[in-house]
Image 1: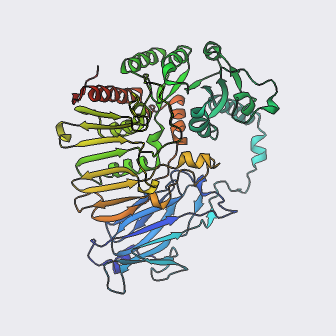
Image 2: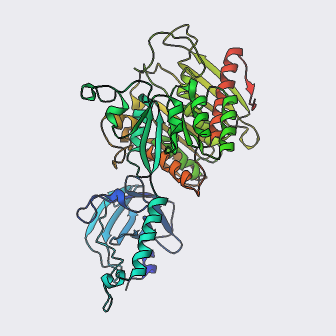
Image 3: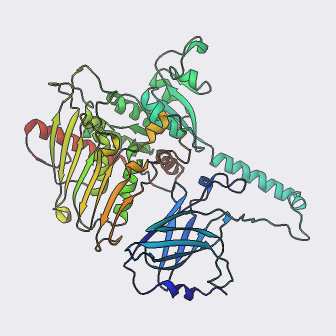
Length: 543
């Protein structure tokens, strides 16, 4: 029989050496044509010598990752709600050539047999191994029993009435949330609709677009008007008529920042939940006003801080959650773009909400505050490098300093429009800590994937190319142990933003992006602008 204690045969006594194992679940029709349909609870477990066990949840790219495996022999099992997977034997041994790297080998094994009874060979690698494992069968929860007939069971009038009532109750409870979108410009079409449409929790119900619908829609270009692209949706031309529609439950405010407050307030007062595009507002006082209106209305108010769902930031958050760095002493957050084509070529003058600090800084400042919280002081430097002499910044540096337990922490948030480097060489994040460091380049690919025609629910959507992966170096004092390696990025997923909004609307969970957090970001922007104008460092203050 299978005796787990025999796993220790190859274990030795040293846990200092390390190797990596990645297990992927491929498409395997007809049994499992789409591995992305696996339940979120799916996970894999590696059981080694007594007291040694690793567990890995399924990732968005349908893989399980086991880093830093000690030299030993392991039993790998994949636990799935709906499918059976064969167990594997995984051996991590010293390489035959006597080098410091380990050899990782895998075989199928058999429950109930001797541990030495190996099945089909899955592969071998030096320093690491990537293998695929397919389900062997589907779990059948419903089986026929002698003497029981499901047809006779449901013929009962009481059973039929109960099923009908239950179906009506579920239909009423789980009906899609009807979404109305204010505006039909770039933001609506690129950053909102692609992530709302695939979500069964939502129905695109209405648009506010001031321009009149084309009289001959057959001659209209796609993207020109909401009535051309979404003929079944309602079309309103005034905010008053839009908000008067009682069917609209959630409003996404995708209009210009100067009217965010007006439109969000009217929607909240009309009893709608509200998502506001970034930047939230142009002043912290306006943020306070909207937050108060939302509290009185009892409706959800949140801000579209979608860059929290970027591939690179999700990777960074995971490392912080795993306590990879020890005490962080320096953090750099870059959002650079070399000569972006969407920049204006003429100086329109500065107005509240304009400039890169409000544009891209809203994202990178939000990420930084989410990691480290409220700063002690703010120092800002604003420049205009493309339109020399303009009052509208296109390049900025914001330095945040902290106190208390984070008194040795300095955060630098930067954007420049002059950076003649390929994307894979552009710095995104730099983290330095007492137990680890991380360097990340590149950019989340979701917008590029959308522009290339990929659908947001495609399993490859949001997955970075390997050239964008970061480099992680940790010491023995890190919670991850000593390691130096290229780190695969998490998969970016803007769909998760709206999934989280749906959960909050349906009840039971708090909204993920709280308006108070976005308000703090706007306040940092205010202080950074004042600091740049005065040439001084300013203490953080709420007003």
